[in-house]
Amino acid sequence: MRYLCVVMALVCGLLSQAFAGDFWQKAKAVFEGKKQQDGRVHLVLWHSFGGSLNYALDKIVNEYNQSQHKYYVEAVNKSNYQNSLTAAATAYRSSTQPNMLVSYEIGTAMMIYSNGAIIPLYELEKMTGITIDQSDFWPAVSGYYSVDGKLAGFPFNSSSPVLFYNKKALAKAGVTHPPVTWQELTKVGEKGRIRDLWVNQL
Image (cartoon, rainbow, N blue to C red; front, side, top):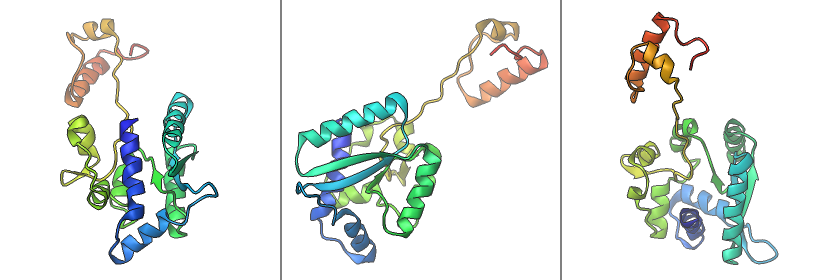
């Protein structure tokens, strides 16, 4: 909850900032002109969460909306990450893009190097005076979303690979402990392939 609020504050802080240059004027236009009849600024967040993740995000957004009366965030489910990226690119060309977009790991580079389609997080920090402590994240996670050591995207959620393995099959291959690196995984895979141990085993 704390970090989503920080993101909301960063985004909402754009409304009161002085912008310089054509890019910032365009960015300002995206965040303005969204006031609803209740006087709140309406911000749109596109995401691709399903199931329990969708429920959890809705809960966070609803809590944020109820915690203050200046901004209202609408979370819109775009079904999957590829659809959301494609829709965002199309919307950007017609100036109808969302205020915030949750992308996935593979889409990170595309977003970071999108030639002005997004406002990098480190620019938002400068514009609003709000600083996010990168040490609050695992280095591997913050590093993935950074450019030159600066957070370009906010690590809202990050997928983590998990290895399931069959102890008996590993023992038959002469492996005493599960692999902990990609290189070790390759070696273990080769041992099992040579001995035909991996069919219906892992």
